[in-house]
Length: 120
Image 1: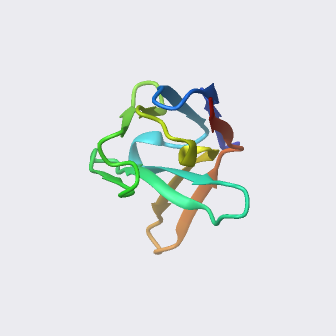
Image 2: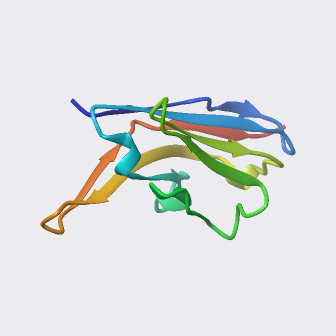
């Protein structure tokens, strides 16, 4: 059974920091690309940051220089360190594990999400 469990969300003041974790089980973690998405009320889900199995990272322009994604293959966990948080970062944050199978199918799993609220 595949599980992705996000944690670390909460309420933080503007300018503050949070560290999100995505703990996985049931997959060969090291071969998956892990991506953090977020969805604010009334908005579409958007990509925040992604890290490949080789450690290559990409970030949304809106979070570059403020967020850092990293992975610990020994712990099957991905982290999203968020700094200089803004009210517009408020959203439910989801992690996703994805890979292409040998027959070129996209295999993707999702976590349940964790709420991040940036407010004074």
